[in-house]
Length: 483
Image (cartoon, rainbow, N blue to C red; front, side, top):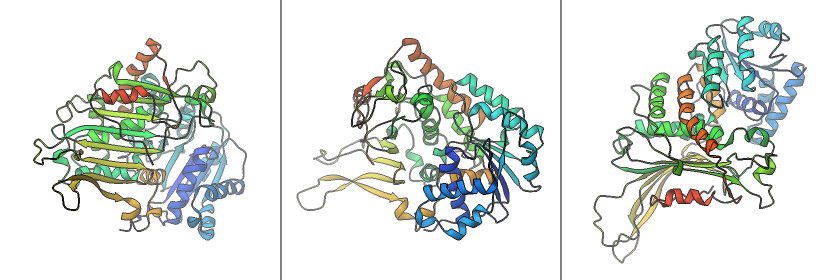
């Protein structure tokens, strides 16, 4: 199977924070890959905007170095790189002042898509939005891309929404969550809604429980001061894991339409039950394996911030009544792995005498690494000796299923192209963000009021011991964390 590349319309994309880390690692290399794949028409342009006083050529050199570092060597075509750099421009701009805005306006063209990527701190969102409006750089058809964190609680999220709403309407605002751009996440919707095989089973009558895991091997070294004000709940659960939960649990939308999809996701968030204290486990990695502890990385010996969290979550509606969703995410764990595992119930009656080899059917959606899906099913063990059962995977790896898997866009590439197309399906709506914080805030306020401290866990482990007990008391076990 070969992926099709459909060119987008001519565009001017302004990247505020164009010299920053995200632009260097993800945005600019991703745009080059889309250029190489033929998805950009030749007239399209990318404009970096930041405080640094750089010429176009100096900024192009930075982009050239970013491509060399973050694009696989096999995709580094000299002629394509030069062609891409020829479409790169730069403006030195003061986000909170007047400098550079006239120069940026002079670069803008009529009758092309205008998109503005806010790869900056949220404190600058309002200033940039205001100046884009005041200088008439953005028009009624322009789009803005907003990076997380989108608030740190309900009050700040509402304030940000209000600031942006002064200058842009909701159809122009693209709140980006790169997890929703992953190929496997989108395939989750295809598996559910394009196959009669799964949808009739996608409910409490047949599903025992769901596990969502996002495990990382890295710690917070280098960003400890930021992370200590956030923690795993704000940094991962409120956005990434919440979005994955919504895609699993949502009802079928009437059409694959941006607002229809987001309406159904919003219903899931609003149906989430409050989480009980005993259904929350927080952890903080200690020292070991040659690594420093979290409190050293955060430069806060008294820190009560969690680098790991596990939750048992339940949804109060007919489809999911009684089905627990177990969420966990953490730093410095055994392996880097992100997956969704839907475990089905056992058959209502065992017809085989020897059921010792029986295991549940499990649909595993693998987000990273090695994106793909597999369905664990029971078969007869080969050979004589009676009906002995064994579990085998029906496996679908994207690397095997797609002829040129390296050409499949990564999450940022796909989402940026969706911005140019004007497709908001994979972006969060303002009321969705606020509903997520409305559910999250009481959980955080509860442990802060109790003065709870996270449980220390060993780096390179699967997390704190209490997280194992969270599952064991329900007669279940976490899936092993492995690459």
